[in-house]
Image (cartoon, rainbow, N blue to C red):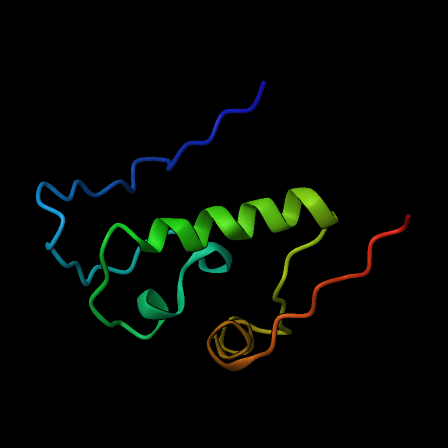
Length: 87
């Protein structure tokens, strides 16, 4: 059984058109909009879920960096390399 939690950094979007600007959480799971301090909706959670699925499928994170700034740059501008699966 798996449990996913947000460690208290949840934000409720009452109506679907509401936008947010706060930047809290674990950087590796943040969408490019959040990292660039742009407005975002609850759809940014789909990005975070995709990162989690990638990690579960391939056993590694899709983006990395030598520093936090390097990680941010790779998430925002870096290409996504999908590892080959063994058959």
